[in-house]
Image (tube, rainbow, N blue to C red):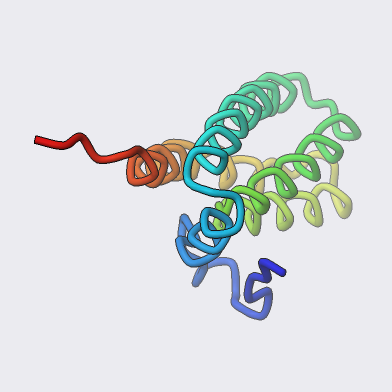
Length: 130
């Protein structure tokens, strides 16, 4: 229903897939979509903080599960670049639990992803009449 183009290479993916989010807003309504995305931003922020902490502890299995969850949450929120980076990190960890390059890539997208999503949420707010 709200498909994304999975054929793109992760490096080519936009930070935020606005078309997907626009279709979601058309289906659910602006208020509901804004609430859903706001809640998702909190959840994703918590998971990214846990990823940063777990990465420092070198817990390979916990990291694998966490980046898998981040890939899913980010993807459902239209954060295609972060979702792709998390999927890449998951594959890297599967091959070598000590490899942290993929995790660093995910964490490096946190600010740009959250800012883009916050800015999109602002477009969903009703316009104040003069």
